[in-house]
Every structure is written in structure tokens, then in C-alpha cells.
Length: 310
Image 1 (cartoon, rainbow, N blue to C red):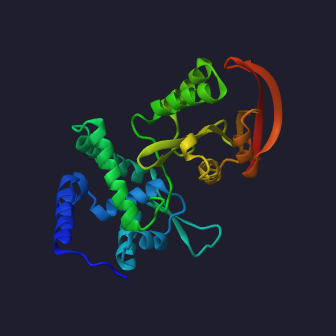
Image 2: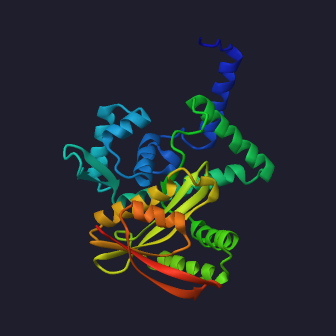
Image 3: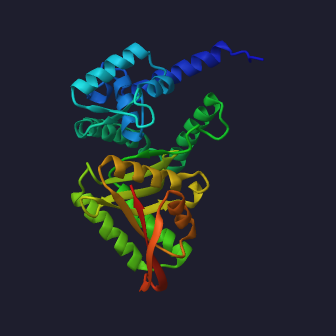
């Protein structure tokens, strides 16, 4: 049975829509003073934050007209913002991804959107910020009709300012809490992250941040060891996000990226005591190559080197 809706409730929803669209800057001809419309910006966001997107998938998930989407994507391709790659599984399907030029064009829009939300929430006390976010999550959950909030429990995205500090902090705190490792481990993580942030090559090195309900819940890196060898580093999943398959998804993203980037092999270093991570690596096809005992992070450990031929 469809419930009746009062005119007052309709008016309240329309009033909120007018208020919010004005506050987030989507009423102009372009989105946040960028060269892109709201729809174009949303398509760029999807391509920046997902792998193996197709035109059909974008149309289905965003409710776009196929002809309109085709013209938009053709223009993006002409301007060098996206690349189209035939799917290995079905050559008739074209996989869409942002080029380096596309990521550069999208980056200021992403930062501006992020900063505008910060500006919206920052004047409020923490308790009020939490109320606003929870109210938005409630709207999303009820309108979508999914009691588990969104159908996608998390999104993977590029790091933003502040994320590198979060990676270092959470590795240090979480491994101290769960494993008793000392500050030597946090220092190692800081060195890895600093080297990546200063001079990584975007074409062959990548960091993913996993985000759920606006909160960081995981990360992983692919870095270059040599022209033919990629290294998987700093896989982390927050306790609150475990059980969602996030660790396996992050590793799968690393493998797919390494293959697409032309690496022949992939390697990683872990510890024998990290059983959950070891299971993920083994399930992804990595094989234990060698191990050695060592004294690190305040403990006697057994380091393990795992390899995968791509």
C-alpha cells in the first residue's frame, strides 16, 4: 500500500531541496565555477573513484539518457580527459577511465567540493555536525529503501589532503593496540608514505583510500620496485569495516592496476602473525617465497615475502 503524503510534507521537502542546492553551489550553469555541469562533474567523480566503468553502467546508476551520455563521453575523449579500453572479458565493451589530464581537471573540483562541505559544517559544534551527517544518512537510507544504508558499503578514492597523515596515525595506533608494536613501526610507515607523497609516479604508482559514510576505513599502496616489479604496501582495514570484503577488494585493485600498468610481477612483505592479511594475499594468488626471523617494532617476528606473477 502506498502511504498518503500531505501537501505540507511535499512543501517541506521542496523547501529543503531549494535550500540545499543553493548552499552546495549547483544552481549555476557550471558546477562550483568549474568548466563542467553538475552531471559532467558527477560522471568525472564516478570515473575517478571506480574501476571498470562502462557507459551502460554510468547510465544505469546515474539515470542518464544513453544518447546524452554518449555525447558527453565522446567530448571527454576528444578533450583527452578519458580513455577507452576494450574489456578483456568482452571486447565489445569499452572500459572508461580518467587520463592524467582528466584527473588534473577533476582534482580542483573535488577539492572545492570537499572544502565547501567543510565550510558548511565547520561553524557548527561537533555535536551538531554529527546530527547533520546522521540526518543525511537517515534520508539516504530511507529513500533508497536499504536498511544497511547505501548499497555500496564503501567507496575507493584517491587520497585527499590530510589522508597521508591519517594513514600514518592509524597504522601506528592500530598496530600498537592490536599487536603491541612500538613507534618504530609508525616511523617506517611515515617513511613509506612520505616517499610516495613527495615523488610517486601516477602512471605506475597508486594509493587508494577506502571511505564509508564519509569516514576513512582503509588504505593500500602500489609502488614501483623496478620496471617490471610492483610492490603492494600498507594494506589496512579499520576494525569497524572488517567483514565487508574490503581487504580483498583493495588487494584486487592493486593487482588490476599493476597489470594495467605493465608490471610483470608483484611482491609484498608481511609478518607471519598477520593471519587475516595472509589469507587475503593467498586467496588473491600470492605465494609465499621466503621468510626470515627478525627483531623489529619491539618484537621477535617472522617476516614473509609473498610474490605474484601477473
